[in-house]
Image (cartoon, rainbow, N blue to C red):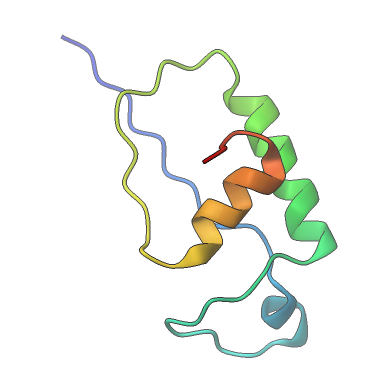
Length: 72
């Protein structure tokens, strides 16, 4: 059986732009980060994804929403 592991880092946040450390804070994506999230969603289209592990912060959910890959 073959498994494929895809590791993705979050898109750029406003704090990333400013060079600030984020720690465990809920920061929103910058405009560039939103573009990155959208590009990632395009790249992953067609991938069969069985499981997703994510941070408990709001950012991953918001990033998925911004990319159009998640809706609650």
